[in-house]
Length: 359
Length: 223
Image (tube, rainbow over all chains, first blue to last red; front, top):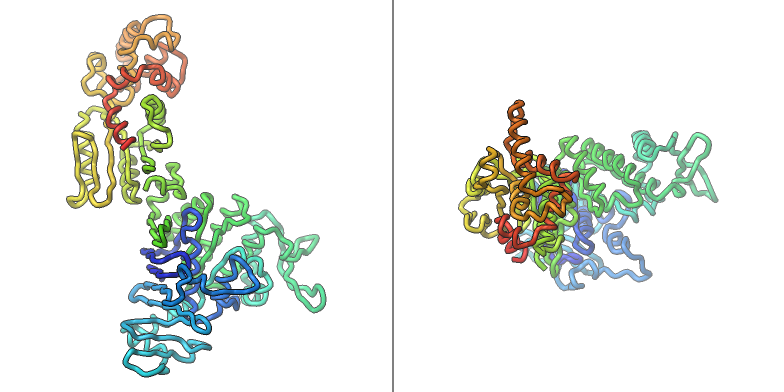
């Protein structure tokens, strides 16, 4: 499980550290305080292991393009104040070791682990093909396996492998994700149907939105394209035409039912959601995350989301921690609020989103 | 701009009392955020929580009940003691968390030496002591409350009523009960309105004479 993150020079964060991560981690704070950047940093860390996520999205391009789409893409925005001359660093602290991941701009963006001035990186195609490392005393890159990295780090290779698997599968769910439903259908839905996880999604969606979807199926539509449709008793509707809230919920649930032993990063799950449906959705996310051993990182502006997370995490006996983020001149300050304090103060009527007025 | 102060009080009547008092003392409403916590144990829990989440300035108002105000303060000081990093100042009733720039102002609520209450054997003291004393100190309040007699008459009547109730086996020991008996004699207002009206219609000078916490509250709010 990821315990801590340190960020240097990434996006709007010049320097910042968040500690004591638990099973569920919730980021709150005003706009422009680094909530999305933290999610992006964890997602970006997966680039060390694989360029593409489970949906086949290029992590770097996705982060760059997901907020604003332009005809010309520049990557310098990933660096704090566009200072691409030195690497930005995302240090991830796991239970027994730290992975300091550096990102540099060359012909394309490269990532490597630097420990004691020795740099380890994956081969361009696939880390399974082997690792390269370069020490200051070594002339040129030398091919080696990631076993070498484990040996160098003096950690159990199986543990490191688990960490790599965790990073490889790290998945970011945001509003953009629900707009690219074609990718969900092509990359995830097969896995969902094969394991009949669609039944769970249908049950949750029906309960949350008071619908009576009987099934999902693919049908040919125009030309040779197939569309995912929801079958109601008297009509079938393309998923594309379902309401924004339902579509976002299906997207989130698709990610939660299929991911395992990794981190799921969810940006504002409340988007487009009615308050009653949101409670159901949060409950389902927590339940499935517990089943699938997922560490959750959630950003939110919503009091209802926060309250539902507190309520259901307590009922399910899952540990939750809230981070109230403040960003001052690039320095990230994360005030931690543990589950007991958060519950006590929220029940008393404190709005944790505006708790900064007391600081 | 300075931070908002987090204030915790024991009951909703205390909340009404402080809202009216702050207004009377010219302390802007947004300066202090008041929350009601039911039960003394929970009061400790909430203050501990507020300290843990790094709230800079906290006010806790607790009824003195049968204790002396200094005893209440000492109790808080002992509770919040942190490895020699806590500085308790009885003169200002403040507890400072050194290094964290956090400070807690303790307001023990109630008048421990009040002849009228002593005479009536009211031993459980609280915020209502102030309300009763304001009535005694500012007799014009009877006009404002549209009471046909004098406050003195009402107080005598309340004393008689208490004795009668006690002879019938009712235990009347708190100033909260006494204030409510007085309220029923004087007016039909509900408790919160009664408290609010008394504070709103009493001159600041009288309030400052009766309620000892005014000065420290003002200092703390405008610090």
